[in-house]
Every structure is written in structure tokens, then in C-alpha cells.
Image (cartoon, rainbow, N blue to C red):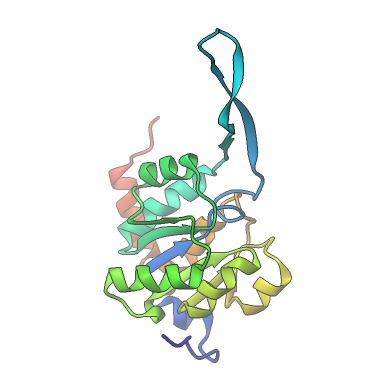
Length: 201
């Protein structure tokens, strides 16, 4: 599958998007990894480190959670591709009802292509949000490559759009808003969201 021509504007590319895929560490999170000792009681009653040794946990921004709901209302299918494997990510993916979840992906370009095939789409219909060089293979194949504000320089250079917010601070929300506004759906999506999720006074 060939990458899209570079000459198309970010808005022109966004108008074609029906699939939004994204990295986790540095996009859904601020990139920090937290580990707690995983101590289990042994048969003798003493506390020992488990075979894994630690429990990984991450922090997610509520704005990005709302973004996935807004994306769904706007007709965008969503999913994540991450090199690491984390039960925390699996839990968050279920919470957000993401359609595509690829953990442990060492080749994000191949994972992107696989998801595009599963979705019955062509690469120009897919967007990818990344922050580091490991995301470049997927970004290069995507119809719209998006970098978060604090992405590495090499990633920003190859992105057609850079979010106003940093990873873990609402960057995915920026990506969703950009796409839906380019498609002329933003106002209607907001009205629909508010009718489904009325403000509690």
C-alpha cells in the first residue's frame, strides 16, 4: 500500500478519514510509565515479589475519553496500536469501547495495514496519531498523519497536523475535533452528544 501524496492539505486529508488510530504512551498518556512492586503472599506467609516483579499503571485524560465518544457519533471508527502490552491499556480500551486494539506491535506500519484491511478500507481513509519515531511507519501510510504538540522533531516534520495540546493532555481530543470540523460534522456531533449526555445541574 502506497502512502498518500504529500501535496494534499491537512484539511483535505481529514475530510476523507473514517478510521482514527493512535499510539498510547505519549499520546493517550504523557509518556511516563509508573511501576509498583507486585508483592504476593507466599505459602510461608512472607511477602515476596511476584514473577513479573511489578504492576504497570498509567494516567489518562478525561478529554480524550469524551473524544472517543464524539468520534463515534461522528462516524469515525477508533483503535490503538502500541508497542508495549499493558492490562491497564486493555482496561481503558474496553472502557472506551475501541473497535481495534493492537498491543505488542513492534511494526506499527504492519499493524496499521492489518487494521485497515480488517475495516475494509484503504489507507487514505485512516489517520494515525503519534509522538515518537516508532510511530512513523504507521504515520507514513496513513491518509492523515497527526503529531501531538510534544512529539519528537522527526515526527512533527512528517505530520500534516500537530495538536495544540500535548500527549496525555487532550491531544486525541484535538485530533477528533480537527477531523470532524474538516468534515463539517462538529456542531451536529456536539448537539447529539449533549442530547445523549445532558449536563447534570
